Image (cartoon, rainbow, N blue to C red; front, side, top):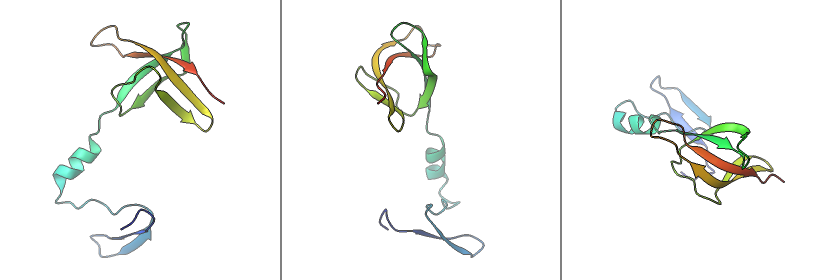
Length: 103
């Protein structure tokens, strides 16, 4: 199936539906189901270069590492650029120092 095709799902009840969502995972494929639903999310606090909380003050992502120059997209025409990172301890939320580069 190509990415532009519609998914046609036959459910256990025997009914068939057509929509743009992928068909549900089969019940007997529990290891794949487990891997898909247990993706880790990493939380970062965001601060501006003067130490005040950025807007937004934190965000969650599946990317565990951010480097100087990386862009954090916030929506159409809105982004933050990473200019540094501060990690205080293993149990503390890492802080990304960012600057607003919105258009």
